[in-house]
Image (cartoon, rainbow, N blue to C red; front, side, top):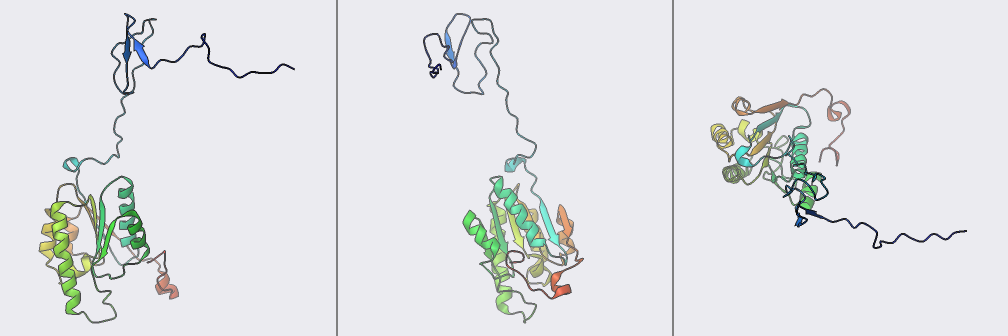
Length: 237
């Protein structure tokens, strides 16, 4: 039985050379793989391979100066307005964009989305005192909405985020807590290239008119109405 010995590189073995030799036999090292070769043919007459220049894909994120910032509105009585906005937030984060979310009316700070936001280092703040459906509106509710809006106005002007979600903003607009025209003007004059997603029921007509994309979430069937099921962790909160 013949014993096989491992192949070793010897004097007769051709060692790959990362440099190129021009027609005069001189080395012309190329350290950048995308750099165009200095010569087009090697000493042996073979043509030097020219690397392909990669072009940006059609879905790359353009710089702010070249970006059309969208105003998106998710409204309607159906479930999914905030959920859809969170999906865009996650997608934009995956593209390396700066994202943030400010929630009007809502007060909970330990929902599933808040937990993952903390893990990702994403700003997500609840600005309200809670739902007013089962209680009377207080001065605190209105004051918090107005204070939150003052903060958001500055954020819109400075262009802190590439994608900014203003969750439930339609509610204080509809209820008269915020000046509708003031909100529309701030959204229209926001920093170049900022995508804004506004969610909430009963979006004012002026907001719908100013938006680039509007989706009306319609209820076909809901477990709370048909089965009396309450909100569930991981699905609703």
